[in-house]
Length: 432
Ligand SMILES: [Zn+2]
Image 1: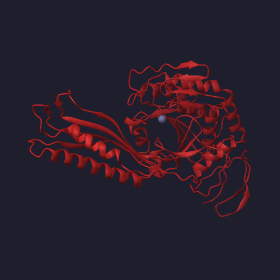
Image 2 (image 1 turned 90 degrees about the vertical axis):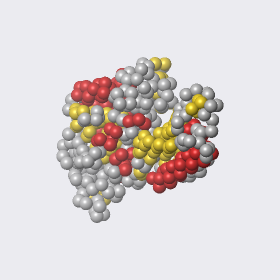
Image 3 (image 1 turned 180 degrees about the vertical axis):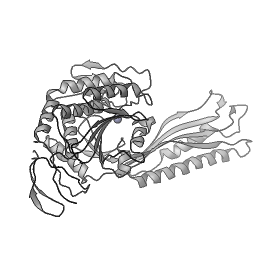
Image 4 (image 1 turned 90 degrees about the horizontal axis):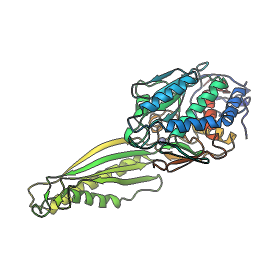
């Protein structure tokens, strides 16, 4: 199925008219807007063909970017290389003060500004071996899919638009951003969408592999929990409240939490630490906890339940040793909150992405996830996260791998079509 660029379109008032191939306009961001996928627009078509033809270039980008380490908060080197590559494509680039690399491709008119971004950071610490192993069509390296595939897709879309001279009414921002993964806590996006915000009407994050569409932002809350006491000898000081025992009580309560399957809501004690030796009452029992939900309400409920459990565990442990001179104290440290939000699947941006996928012959499954789009979604800015094509395994593990398969190029093609459509190529003119 393909979408013609010259169509009989119905405007917001119900007037049907024939519209030319490329018309540009100020477009209201309403859900009623007809979706136009400029699949047959000559320049877009040329760009789509070049993506397939030059698929090896995309893979080269993916591999060579991946071999530049980008641990959390140390994305600079990879960022500078992205800047160099955008500039080599003839685009002016700025790096903002948090480290986001932003290449600007000016529009021909006053169409919507569309940002497409991949994230620079990985979850891997400094010193991780990032050399890419190639075995036939399989590439193995930490970060090869998440998100070197996204970065390569952003570069490929930029290159194909430059080479095919695709004229877009709206300006396109090609972005390589910092801080998507856990510790970064979306700081790149928080900065990009700070107040006063950069003008961005539509935001697309390309994150990972496959051909899925993320229209929901899974909210997450993460805490470092510390039970602290005086500690002492396990035999000599016996009779005092024990921070690790208090933490154990808390974990036992958390383990019994009941959460809804829909909207999907989850919890996990991911790291426990503390302790000096087997015969020491530890002065510290610490744990890191992650809770997530597609629903802001469910996340808030779970968060409240969690804090009640922590406090109850503390009370019980202190009450267990009523004659102790010292008690255990509780500290809850916020490690980062990501807001939950939802972009309706019938919204203009989601319908555009789905129609673009259809025109390339696939139906993108939709779902919710925790990505850079959480921030614009939570601010009410139309945003989606798309996969970058191909097939990935083992994201966030050092054995992460990527296989391009027969149709890996469809990821970047999809991204190009979405960007072109949203920026107004082939769009209908109508008054709101
Ligand atoms: Zn990612």
